[in-house]
Image 1 (cartoon, one colour):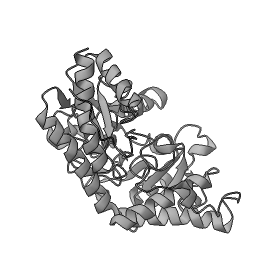
Image 2 (image 1 turned 90 degrees about the vertical axis):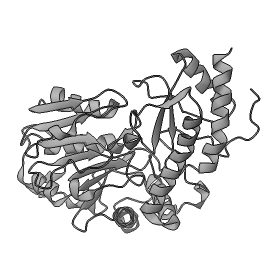
Image 3 (image 1 turned 180 degrees about the vertical axis):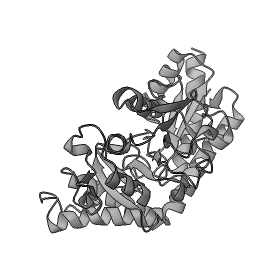
Image 4 (image 1 turned 90 degrees about the horizontal axis):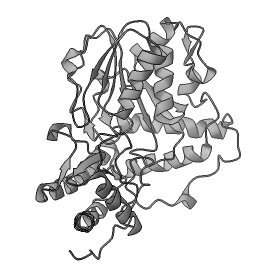
Length: 372
C-alpha cells in the first residue's frame, strides 16, 4: 500500500492535555496578570471573568455556582467526595478507569455504605438500578473507554440524593442536562484544549445545601474544604481560589473560552466535535479491520474515540509508534488499563480536515504492521 502524501496540519490527537485551539499563539495571551498576586484586583478579575464566561457559555442555571479548584478534574472530584459524601449510601456507576478510581475511593478510602454497578470496557452498567434516595457518582463520558451516557433521563427529578458527575471530557462537547446534575466536575485541559493543573467545580443549590448542612465524620485537608462554619466558602466561586492558581493557565483558559464564544458558543463546539466523530465513523464503516470499542452507536463518545483493531497488542503498539515517527498522529495509543487499541481525540479544538488526512495513514500503518 502506498504511503499517503498529505499529513495532518496538527498531529496532536492526545486525549489530555488535548490539542490547542486552531490558530493558537501563546504570544497572543493577555499576560498582564503574570507576576501579580492572584488576590490582587487584576488577578481576581481574571479569575472571576473565567468563572463568568464558563457559566454563560455553558448556559448554566442562574443559581448554579462555578468554582476553580486545584488538581484538575481529579482534584475537583476528590474535594466533592471527601467533603460531601457519607450522609446517605452512594450508588457508584463505573465502566472505565476513572469511574473505577471513584469507586475505590468510596469503598476503600472513605468506606461509605455503597452499591457498585460496573460494566466492562465498551459497555454501560444498568442505570435503572439508581436509587433516588442515594447519592450517585458516574462519569458522563468514559475518557479511557470511548463510551458515554446517551442522556441523563434515568436520573430522577424527585431524587433526594445528589447526582455527582465527572464530566471532564464531555463539557463543551456533549449536550448536558444540567437540571439532572447536582455536582459537575471538569478540567480545562480536555475540550477547551487548556493547560493542566486546574479543575472546575459546578454546584447546584442542592449541593450547596449539603455542604452547609452536613459535617463529614473525617478530617479534611485544607485543600479539600468547601465549607467553613456551616457556610459555603464563597471565595472559591468568586475568584479567590482555595490555593494559588497559575495565572498563565488562567490566561490560556480565557483565550480558549473566547475562542469558543467566537465560533458560536457551546452549541458550535458540540457540533464540531460531532462532525469530527463522523469522519472516523465513515472510515470505520469502510474498513472491516477496525471497530469502535463502544458496543452501541448511542453510547459512542465524540471526544475520546476508542478503537479496536484486528491486530495483536504488539502490532497495535508498532502502529502507534510508526504513526508517531511519521509525525502524523501523536499520543493515540489506548489508555494503559484499556484493551489494546487506539484513542483519537475528536474534541472541538481538532479540525475535521486533520482527521480526514489521518485516516489514510491509519490504513497504511495497519497494512505495514500486519503484513511485515
